[in-house]
Length: 235
Image (cartoon, rainbow, N blue to C red):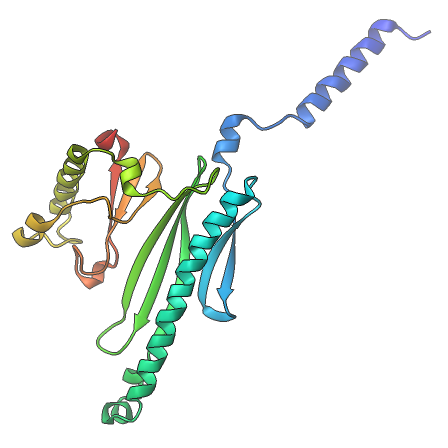
């Protein structure tokens, strides 16, 4: 007859193994798990790419987020069509014969996932177009969502008091002054500078990042500069 203590030990070992093998992730690991994002091309146009989220538990939230991102690429496509029409109209002009490359307009739309955890996702849409001149122009648009319910975050969802906007503006101005190699630091720019509820932003670890358009606060060579605002400034 087998030793009952040995059998009991074997049973306990099997139970312990199964409990660890099938253990559910902790709430913290769920919070830090990124959601799946896949790349689509609009109407098969390879230079018009946009993201779609997938496999969300809340399908209504998934639909809401994807609809907003689809709307953006539809607007990008409309801008692309307008650019094509403009290019057709100038093809017979003397400049196009002298410098054909100056009349070959370009458009592309790409995206980047900047934050994807803690039930939030931040996506940067980057729309570039060239319509002659020394260089093209890029417009950046940020989208911030709650991945549990599909809510789109605006800056005034994060910053709820005017006094805090003033505090952030002061912090950003000091940052600009400390980085003259990146930003315009003349008095006119600094005096006019103000962070408002309409400012583009995205989530980062330990705060939010404000992103600026070309020429808004810096020369073209600086691209779209970013200023990170720590939570200690606005919490």
